[in-house]
Image (cartoon, rainbow, N blue to C red; front, side, top):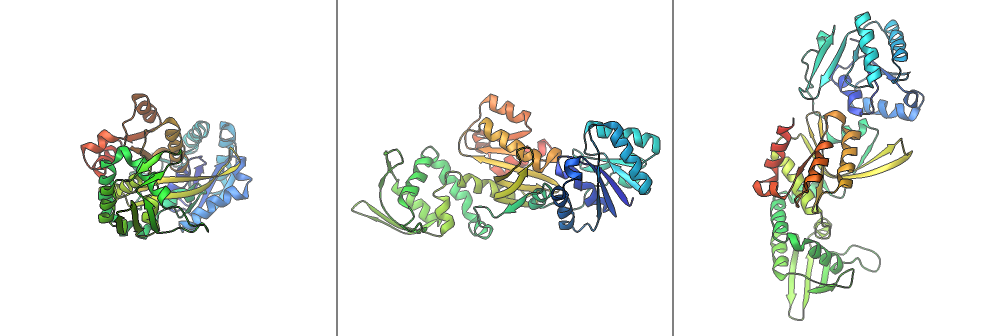
Length: 393
């Protein structure tokens, strides 16, 4: 096969996997006019192909994937121009797949597909080269965003600092569990006690009283023992508790300052480390920011994904909540899963609360696994991730 025919799919991974595996001389995309007549949309595809060093010619042919006759005629055109070709019927609309089936039956055009469940290609007809072929590479998290024309930006967490604190994350999470009911107030105390200076500069030094005024004028008091434990953890140092109700200390760096001023960071860190400790992922990122264009709304969208991982060619998107999971959070996660992964993607919602039955049913309908407080009490999160991931592979 020198020429690969792809039925364009809105799920980016469907458009590239066969090309990544078989490395054809050219790819012919049968695509709607919104792609065939848009240089910017085509550039998203060619940029990814260049990123993967495929060295492949790319051709876009306009057709309506909702009209069987039009797809059939374009297939005739492609085969007449490029006789040594095969068609990937993994993606595409129902009408396009029906047209491809008709055409392959009459012309003997080689056709194959990919099974996400079996994680291998299968020969549909006259494509023996594809039978039982498994991808031998692993995608990185950034690949999935680039496939969709997105751009990954540096998140809120510095990767080097993450590994600097790697061995402290479990202890940090245990501290969270111990003070879980008061965690919001504790974080609020750190926020109020460590305001930026008059010029807006971040200060690592803190001088505060035990009690501060909250956003609603309420009184928030920090637990002295909590501060000692945070110091032993290495997130603050030079702690001084003075008799006149004053507390002095320094954050170890800007990152620990952020973690102690952000309610959800502790669970994100713990989930990131759990994914690494599970040993099943080849790439794991924490707090990933991705920019992408929402064609339907004609606007650029920015999403921050708490934890993103890759298992071979399978993307995994994880949302972390120190509050109950709600429908909005599930819907947002489902959109990310479908947009950047499609049929092969997995999604998890990790929460330190238990979810209502109606929420669990909604999550199941969207293909999202919820790991809640009861799961966390059964064992380590890394074990729970492995159990959930392997049960539904």
